Image (tube, rainbow, N blue to C red; front, top):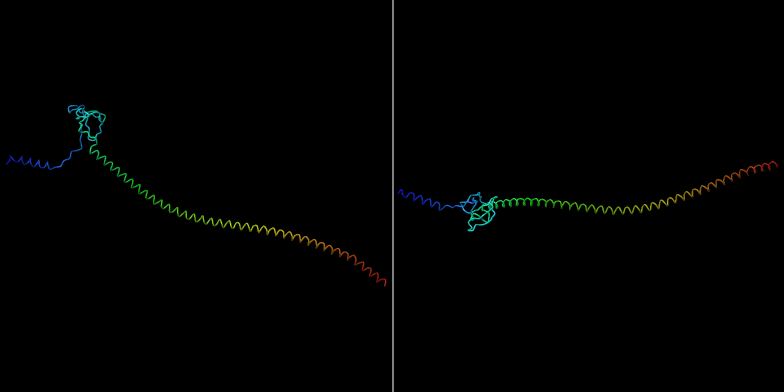
Length: 220
């Protein structure tokens, strides 16, 4: 019975191993050697994802001569790929996703800012429209006032012309009155002079008449 125990354990171990899923790790380092065999000296270790410049490929294609990190050497061709490693591509994809996410956030922020600015511009537009309407109404009012002012000015000019004509008529009337007053004064002066002269003549004549009467009475 004991001799079957190792066999049973081997079967159990094999069954467990066969039922388990494994993934090949992407973490790898390859040797950069001075020649095209494992016997040649290792120049340095190149980690997965390292970028190398191909110089030439060996005759059988097993090894490839490359330049990497300032050194030259040979590496196994099967470890070289035209694309970056899956880990590098994943990191690059994650970086790109992060950049796109940040760009998306930035665009959303800019969109929100633009919408706010548009809303503010609409408010300003409405305010300016209202102000424009008020200014137009004020302009119309001023235009009406200006038209009324011109009409009043024309009326004032007509009244001033009439006033000037009346003033001229008044001045002429005053001149005529003054002329009449001068003429009346001269007439009164002449009349007064005539009365005085008449009085003087009467004063000269009456005494003589009185003396003649006395003489006639004395002769009687």
